[in-house]
Structure formats: C-alpha cells, structure tokens
Image 1 (cartoon, rainbow, N blue to C red):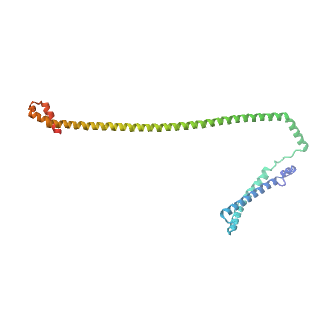
Image 2: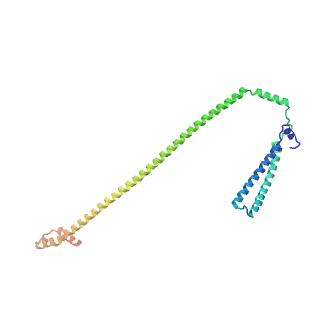
Length: 244
C-alpha cells in the first residue's frame, strides 16, 4: 500500500489504515500477555511453587509455551495485515476523490431529493410497524401464558385422576381379596359340615347293620323268620354282612 494511490487517498482524508492495524496487533499482544500471566499465577497456586526451587522452572516453562504460541500467532497476524492492506484498504484503480464544489453540490442535491416530509413519513411508518409488532408480541405473550396455565391445570387434573384411579384400584383389589377370603371360609365351613355329615351317616349305617346282625338275625332264627324271608332280603343281608 505504501507509495500507491490508496495511501494518497487515505492521507487526503486524514485516515491511517496502518495505525488501525497496529492498534489491533498491540491489543492482541496485550491479551496474550495477560492470559499467560493469569496462567502462570494459577499454575503457581495449584502446584504450590511459590518460594521454592520449582518456581523458576515453572516460569521458564510458561515462557517457552508463550513463545511458541506467540510465534505462530505472529505469522498468522502478518498474513492478516497483508490481506487488510491489499484488499480491505485497497482502492480500485482509477478511483479519484470528487472535488470540493462537486461534493457539496451532490450533497445539496441529495438533501433536496430527500426532504423532511419524506423522512417524517418513513419514520411514522416505522413507528406504526413497531407499534403493531409490539401489540402482536403482547398478544402472543398473553396466549402463551394462557396456554401455560391451561397446561398446569391439565397436568394437575391428570395427576388427581390418576391418583384417584390408583386408590380405586387398590380399594377394589382389597375388596376382591376380602370377598375371596370370605368365600373360601364359607366353602371350608360347608365342606366340614358335609364331611361331618357323611361320617355320621356312615357310623349310623354301620350301627344299623350291627344291630341287624346281632339282633334281627337272632330274631329270624328263633322265630323261623329266615325261612320265611324273601330272596331279595336274603341277598341284601348277605351283601351287608360281607361289607362289614
């Protein structure tokens, strides 16, 4: 850029691109120095090297790392500086600054073309749009808050319903279990009664048969009733005797 038309044009406008670039480079150097100073302090605190022989080794190690990073950064910043001077602050060939009278004339024409009335209309239009956007935003916020409240109420209702349903199912399960216990107890009682009844009936039948053998048979012999008994009675008597 030095000795070129771009430098002349920037000088005529009292602009110094190189000063801007130098300020950026100086800011970067200051940030790097502060960062490594903070890094050194933290490392010294964590490693507890203050006042020991290791403090010097730590200082040299941090300086070595800083020099490595600074060297690589300087190369990149040098490339950035060249790019800025050639492209960002480069002026196309054939470019020339307008003369003072031409510049003032163009400005006056632009000011006349863009009057106060047009500017006010544009500002009013922007204000109206901004107001409309504000109203829409407020309306959306109200709808959002309403939906959030509905969601909270819905979640509460759902939770209450689920809790009631759970309690109902637990109560229903408990009632069914109690009913089963009651039914089982009644069934056991009836079964014991039937068993007892059968035992009593069996004992009664045995007793009757014993009476028949010990008493009726003798009566039949003394009264010649055996000879007068029917065939069916004799068969039943013999069958009862075998089962005893």
